[in-house]
Amino acid sequence: MKRRAVWLTVLAGLVVASPVFGYRLIYKEQLYELNHQQLYMYPENYAENIRWLEMALDADFANPLYALAVIRTPTEHEYYRDLFTMHLNLHLVNQYLGWASDYMKFDAYFYNEPWRDDNLNSLVRAESLFNIALYYWDQAVEWSNRAAEFRWLNLEEVQQWEDQSFRIQSGALDYRAIINRHLERLNQVRAEFEAMDGIF
Image (tube, rainbow, N blue to C red; front, side, top):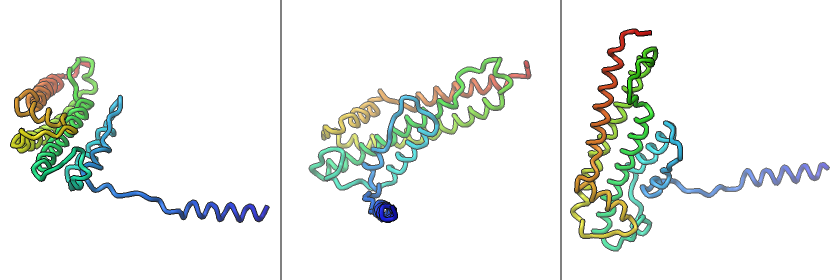
């Protein structure tokens, strides 16, 4: 019995002391792949995705050999970098819009008057998230403009990014207009809540 206890202790020590092989996440491509979509998104899911995407924006690109598309020339690599950065910014716009919708009140019903201050605070939070989304939209447009210089190139593996850039350039995708409509609605609802004068 004593022998068995000694062997179990030695075995447990080996398991704990065995090296764990891992690697640091240091490249945009690695961090981008940590972004994920759940069926039901909660604020903590948006915050997690935003964290990974913002870290990806600040990270370096991997060697073209490990890019998410086949890169054969320096020009293709520049195009890839512009498209990737645009795509990351668009993802951030989507994440911030989703997060803002959790705080957005689309109607000011009279029976919500007892929670008027809470609703007004929620609208402040939604407004700040919409404004951050506008910042990332402007960044996406800037990177799309850079990528547009290489419109004659084609990277099949990231065709979706090229389509996004084309839609931005053609005006078919305009998050500024969408966000401005949300902000107009938010200001209207805010005014309705502020006008409530203690019905209850």
